Length: 167
Image (cartoon, rainbow, N blue to C red; front, side, top):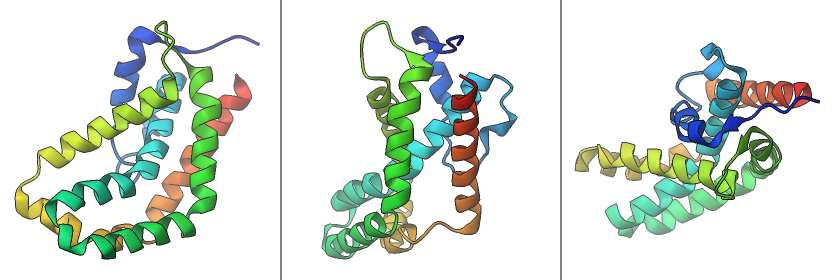
């Protein structure tokens, strides 16, 4: 079986493709199979991390409503336990096959850290009113995935499974 992986020098470049949320653009247009797979993995990581990321961000922006957001987050975790476990399993199984870092660093942690950085950068670029609106709308952000997001999750899982079966 031939090993295909993204060299460590290209790791951050490949992660740029994953910074878009799964609800926005599909990585299917990327020609390189490894970069496309990394983009799908990044999209899965983004879906997995967004609710907790915004929960923490909103704690500082609107602490009075924290109990409402915490309850919404706990509900999201409970209602999405199967998908969360599937994302975590997929990341832990596939990312190390795809990315080999010379530093010995854990590529899954690197991917998740990169996604967190991208989320932080996007949040930092927002005006105060926009941040407050995200926090106010947090309970709706933690609802079950809308049909488009559910379709993109399924697409990501399918594409990653295909790459994994070929490698």
